[in-house]
Image (cartoon, rainbow, N blue to C red; front, side, top):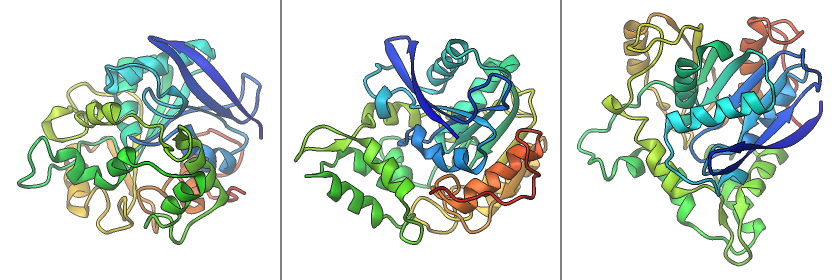
Length: 308
């Protein structure tokens, strides 16, 4: 498996894109979109779990090496950036996968550019999140994504301190690996002793407004602006801090099953919101879903090897 990077021209500058897998243009292609405070390296586990598949993953505007790109942000802006990636890299019709906020990006992108994608796989995201009771609009972001957002205002004296921050994160206490360390290390910018996350708080704040309640109309099968491709949602039973329930409670999952019967919803056992993509078990489940749809050469039931 090879890994390479591209800098794709988009409005306001260049979007950093990571790519794993075969170099040839005929390889099955997956376009993968990371979560609200992540980067393209969140997909390293999935790329290694299916090395025969071409995995193309950007750093979204306002994150990673795309952090310097200006706003406005929002799902439609990210969708336009993804179309620019497809054009610049001359990508074939692909499967579109999104995790967390990236799943919301995937829904909008598939709706706006339907001819670009054959399948849509949502990973613990993509359906509007429940608004907690008695939480104001101003407090909504911190009430729902608080630990992830708090990190964006912190500084760290050196790289070891940032790695220790992630090592103690409840999501990774039992699943720490070199791949998690690489993901964390990539996120750091600045100089010691004022290192910080590359993720823009402004971008996160603007983007989060598309994730809740009636502020985001699902463009899914049976929705108001239906996506034409087959759609599957994989959910995690545990949340951002490894707590239960996960991002979507069992009652919410049942409600969505009733409201959107065109979406296949399945739970991936024994993962949390992070490890459903950033861990061997989650990566294996996603790889099996991809292969079950004809992407890749292994059978859907074959276990994926964990990343090194």
